[in-house]
Length: 439
Image (cartoon, rainbow, N blue to C red; front, side):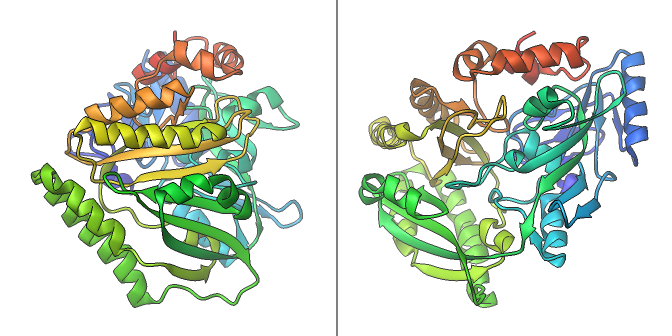
């Protein structure tokens, strides 16, 4: 995946194609010692340092014109502890490789997001999450972290060791140091029964609390310009496994979700007037389906249609109002939105800058096909999200700054104070961090 996120001649480009940068140099360390040496060297040369994973962020969180650290050689499982039920992995390990390796060992993460191209450190540092009633983001499943700090030393943290660093660094935005290894809690491999079914938006909103409490993992996609949604419920199952057949899987996940969807996006981009018609056809073409499989095969799916995304976490009780306002805004605006809006939930957690920090949250994600003008839609959506004290995903498009974050994150000052201590000279600074964390 790393290769697709970069361009020629030392130019780096992210997956969404909306961030391009030319670092002064690129380093691909093969060990923690080499990484620490690269950090010390950068400081001596007066260059800033950023680690970059698979480039799946839509913000410039990983961009630097200084030293760009590529973690692709820092991959693989260091240790599986069957007593403690933990796995320690190198920071550059793609989630896909972690999931497959764990399944081979009869293990699994409890919850995950819907894409698994990202590196474990990139995904956790930006607060990547799935949907869950009790189980929270990837970062909330971390038991210990190892990071190289600005002075080139290696720091380990957990609830016992350096707990104040642990409270912040699990969603560290790359601001506190460069993560080199992560220890996740795992559990014995289990089966999930998935039920996907279309449902009118009015019904989903009316029954939202019930749908959320009755299911371990509930999410839905609303199709703008329609009153239709597709709901997805994942619950643990005693089995037997009933995977999606290869043909049905190809048809639903490749042909419909990537092939036809891509064609519809191209058509909508070329002729915006047909978008509402496309939305009505595609939202009614969905049929219900059920299948049972191991977690990563249920939680994640391929995303080959490139898009740009904004996602905000709002207090869970504000979700219904937020969506009604979003729907009214789209209807009023004359905008043509060809991409479904994704809604998920997460319980409150104890991580300083997690989007679910100290509050039960609902996530609302708006997308636009890559190359389609998205500013008007995102600006109008962001106005609605921020009116509900929304917290934007750190790796997705937003326009918020440190002043805003100090208001919506009770522990914002705790994070910035720790950063002052760990990185007083701002070795890990870039334009994005300057905006979201302040000087």
